[in-house]
Length: 261
Image 1 (tube, one colour):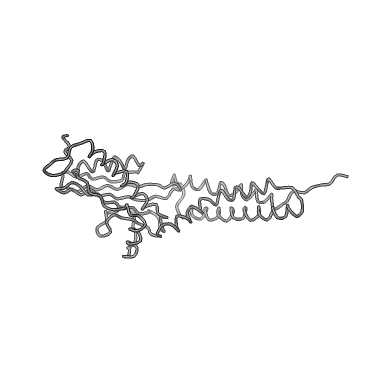
Image 2 (cartoon, rainbow, N blue to C red):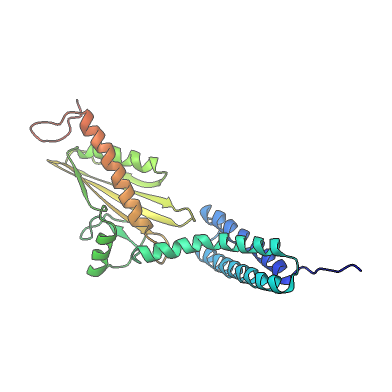
């Protein structure tokens, strides 16, 4: 007599929900990056994806228990459901880690008293406690001063911004060594969130000072992306300026990089 071994329905549904969660996570990201769906719609779909992925994991764990007791088939299906569910939940776990690691703020600036002007982003006011928290979380997000004329400094800053892949929106170069230049750009994160970056190059007799400000174009916290962006940009700028100062002479009278050298 032939014995019929059933396949666990829990395992079947675990794999089905896991297979559904994967496109629910990936496809909206691609659409969001191309600005084919709004950020609010993106959040709704991703919330559904979280629920589906959690359900897949729970069904898979329940299937393991039933399979152990009943001896039914479905171990591979349950494993696929568990694996796909966990994979889909990993990005959200990463966001949770970033939220725990970084302050829940919406904008970061190297100059809180007189920050560079943003064009599109409208960050809210920040208290003194917020400023202290930001300064502690991002110690390298500070104004930089270099012994380089403002006109040359602006060229370096603009070239570096383009090298980062930022979309330049406005650029006003300084007309003289003592003039001020401004630049605004938009940068997209991996998941399609867009942040605005504003930079200011202010000339003086000693060289030029650069300030930066970065804020999201969406509501809510930035999970540390703006502070990390400013720090990474300024660290790369430090490296470029160091090479420039090493390879070019500095004027003995002004202490400013001599472009003629």
